[in-house]
Image 1 (tube, rainbow, N blue to C red):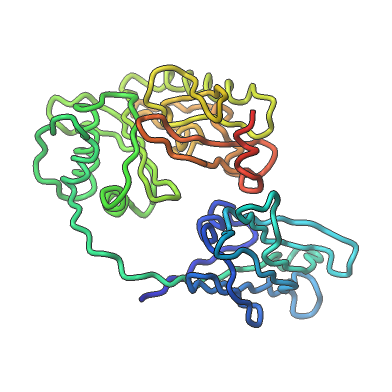
Image 2: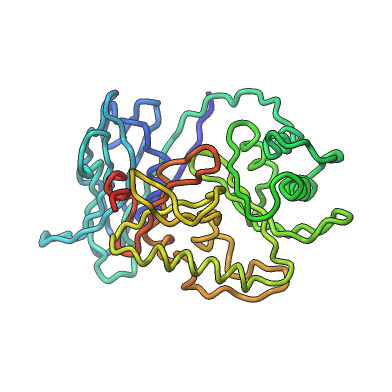
Length: 356
């Protein structure tokens, strides 16, 4: 058994807190250290402030034992509030527990920014027990097989290195699925793809511009790794620029924004015909665009011919309030996703998010 340290703070994305805590529950609290059922230990340290005044000092005020074997944590986020006490600033780590309609506090951290020069908030250090990784027999050729599915495998030479793998993936998608046909792979093949394609600057997503195969039309490969370690991929034809792509993107995001519900529900990675899909008996907008594409995670200059996509074409508020996949559907039916431009999608019951 090995251990891994994960460090978060008051500004960390709610998705990271959810990934750390989802499926877990608190088994014990000892001198401020929170122990989860899988042995993970959470240590919360308030910000150290000014050495000669009270500015910037924060401390762990209260910890709560949340969840149980039958009611586990589903999601989490950090909230901020102020009151009329001497130290008025309070950060709270909230968790949603299965079966509970609202969010419950896991820990509160209190303090005072004072003059604002000495920092704020807290640091959460998680020591996670990592079981030995099972030996995997997946190979780059297995990734190609997973992508091809039931289609005949195209001729692929030996795959050596990141560029060769991405090139082979793009070629396989073109030969077996064509452009604008997204898919998601899971399991050892997805894990190996992520491992082999991760780089210092692009840890979990493209784009990758392919143009090295003889007779292979230049194409752009988009991919990203989701919180369940699945990999979604799609091939785009942007050889003549991104104008048509940008228009398609903007038309979709505008359709979603037209909903009066503050929590917008839609489907991304939709490989079937049509631009709507059924979610909980309601028709919602659907697109073959990946979630990473509609949120602008690939950047705004995605075409090999250049040209920028206006920022407001994307769901730009995803970096503030989040965009949350709540269900992966098989058979090309895409990912049910919620998004908001006014509140954190991690701070709601997902059933409310899909009620239109």
